[in-house]
Image (cartoon, rainbow, N blue to C red):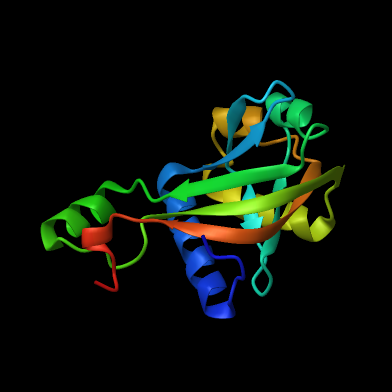
Length: 165
């Protein structure tokens, strides 16, 4: 596990997370309950800062996350590229062009009102589907975010197929 995130790593991390969110429309944030059980929440609204190992996500439906955070603010965010094209191309070549996923070890901040800039980002992300009934039902009431600070990361790897092999 990498304990210090270099700028070149951060750019790769952001790219892998973006690919994963495009393919699956979400990533998972795992937290630990007060009873010690892990819980994963699908989050489709993760935004990573361009320059710093930080970001935010809109917290609207994550009741288990809300219940777990008073116990511990530590979390693991996992983003895996589930694109069939990515996997088929990689399997045929016997090599990944990039990492298939990443785990981000982070601390999650308090719930706070979203800024206008954050609201603009979510509007831009959901714009292609905004016309659908489902979009209006699940993505129309985003008002609050949680900031995240990322401290470490670990690539999802399949050793014999990694880009540097």
